[in-house]
Length: 102
Image (cartoon, rainbow, N blue to C red; front, side, top):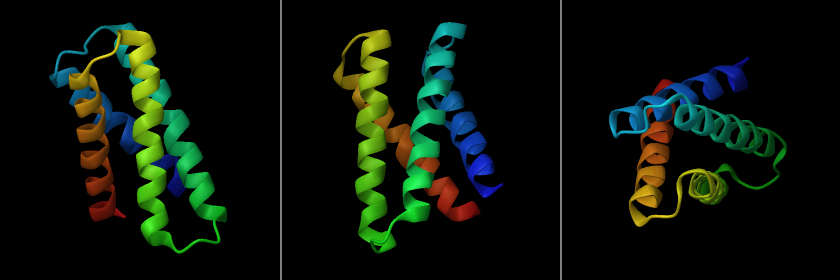
């Protein structure tokens, strides 16, 4: 149940973040939601079965999530440094809020 809640929170927070910054149409929001569902569920699944210490492994996993999401966004929206920076910022915000809540 915590996996689902974390995923919903991530999709919501990052969706709102990108919406506020101009990614407003249904296609853009759908790509953002799908990318976040994929990366969030995979990250949490890997973390739940990992034998590595939580830190710094979580940071490695979060970095992989940022790269994966950016590659998905780049394919869908076109490459840009701004898009990478937004992807990184969205993940930092959602991770931080998740840490506070969980």
